[in-house]
Length: 423
Image 1 (cartoon, helix red, strand yellow):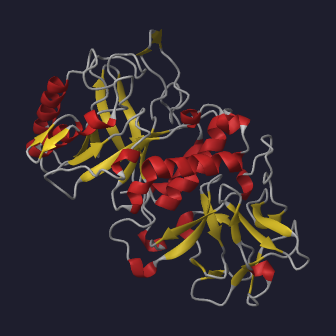
Image 2 (cartoon, helix red, strand yellow):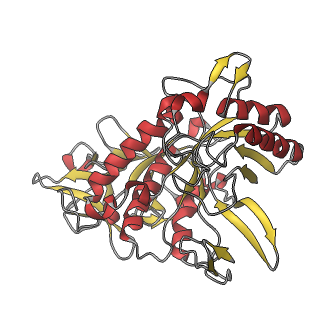
């Protein structure tokens, strides 16, 4: 499936605040030509069924950006800029999704909360957002991961995530990390991102598939360390990363999945796996989310295997978590603690707090809670879990792989984004 993305007006590498491509009226951003271009592309691909959407403009930015010009709504029959672009695409191609980006490098759609977009059509409007580790500088290195994740996730909800609660599709059309796994800022961010993406059941596209470029910013054969493929495009750069995102390639609660089957899964962002069990006699462990247990989380904070009397229990620190049927004790109550809301914590009978954890064999254990203080040197990733609402059953698990923006170049295909989000 292809989404057409109007990236720049003057060809080149994107982006800066002063490249002349940032906002309507900039040196290389003529709004009339932009409307003409959108109309021609929408017309060209009208009836091409695998072209499913059009993103009106990538990463609006720069000193001229402002909310009023983003809207520029005059009356019911007169629009400018984003709303006019949306109407132009819809008029030329009524079947294609219309995708609107926000301000500040596509990180801010907060203005929509109190000022809805007014359009002549409905049922095909999508909002997009970009989210990288560097969106917050080096905060993931200099700050405590729990605190940074809590703050950044809250800010994301304020700036764009609220749209999910309002019933709009929200598409994270760019995210990604250094695939070498050596960037601490990226690594910590990714654990938080995957937790939020699973919890909100977001659609997403990964930057990027490409392993290298013919030419980028004057450099011939530049290595793309955010690329899924290696330099020669022959194999994946990091197979562990592919495993981690696989659980999110299918919707947890997408269209067509029965709400009568609503349950929880316990998702572990650091591995991309979920808590599973083979039988009541076998220890709980991490495994494919397709094989996940169905859990319920009661008002008294008990985690029950749905349809049974068995609940998750803590024993002693450093021991296996277990299932039991005496579920009224404190060691059967689990709270989401810390700013990240990703530590599942319980109290032992002696009053000591412990957290759910994973050992080297992927068995589910309990240990002292990590990184609850302001320490920025520790890494809580093994103890981060998300209780994710799901309506999919094991038989409904499917994986989707599709590409965004495919171009043919001599000698080698160029695919700018790998879209592996849910549909």
